[in-house]
Length: 575
Image (cartoon, rainbow, N blue to C red; front, side, top):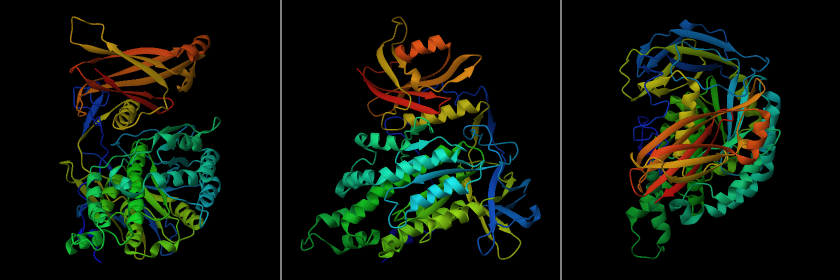
């Protein structure tokens, strides 16, 4: 059998991108968003490209003591001059006081060593306690093996926790996941099965959300937020790939309308029974969307970033192009993907299962990570921990400074023989506008993601009322009046007063989702303790005016709480 992925040799030039359903991630109308304004930004053309490199020996042990002259870097086959070289040998030290990693600019004038690593644990679709009690091993790793300064967060289904150096808080989330995930998986298997797995929505049903939220709910623990699934430009192509299998399943074997060509198309995609194929398709589709969400979640953080992806059976991706696209997106964000297959050898029974496992190996290898296949999860985590404690951070300025938006491949070689080199394999050469204000850049990123998410977000609690604007002599307006739940708002104490800050964005779109107008605003709240107790009942009130450019509109409102790093959104109709 020849699978479709065998027909694709190397198509890494285009990555899946996050894109909105009703609203684009980048508004099309003239915008007042902070990242789009030229004031307070600088244009980046020639920038330092950081490359995280891990070198191990034949036994997988980290190799230290290498020098700058031991390395060579190539971009698209052309050797580059190593302009900066840092060796990071991490040992236990007191964690930094910051509650989570600060967002970083895409282009920094110089490389900055980081004392700790960043780990985002992503639990994919499936059951993890049987047969090898993989969640138990993961909990032990978080509690016992991480360095005190390492930051860790947990992502499951569509929710992510804060990053923290208090590893016990993350372990408690994993304990609640261990207790509850099999029930959620049972519901999801029933929901995403048969033809619904191919043609239906892949978003999490609202009825499942309370059970997912309970995994992350801990009054004394980490804050968390709902993170929308990353929508893929090639999601439609995945569904199209599956259609021959559907066609064959719906035609009885003795029906004369069955033909050999259609059967060959179906066989080229999978050798699984139809029910198993649809289940694998749905879980892979959701996992890949969440991988993109996790990459976005990590993108603006500074340091050595690892996405630890756990899956029982791998990713059912019938085209090698899809593996390369995932890796390209991760490389561009400087994210290493370490994959852990937890289902044992039973998944080696078909060609589809074998290629689902090979996708894990490909994605890890192309991002500089490690793939743990058919191995003890505890030992795999310990090995990954040890080999990442010694890192070489290399930087170069590209000899080609055209920055045409194309993907550029990176290769790193070490002159000493017998060593294995893991590294970032590429990036997209984009000319970008970088803001001086990192808070505004992160706010823009979070609001854009929430605007493109098909469901409402409730991590920031608020009510909103729409009414005609108060300026009858000028262009028609819509007045959005907000009542914000102060109890859900992150605040800090400054000189005895509670201070909070909220970014608000209102998008007005036509019935096809094209944004006709949008407005962004920033609201700072400074409250005495007495006033704070009042607004806990009455709510914090403010309003935003947006242009009304059509009689009937879809209105998407998004609030972003900068201190709590949470977003809330609503989709409303205006007639």
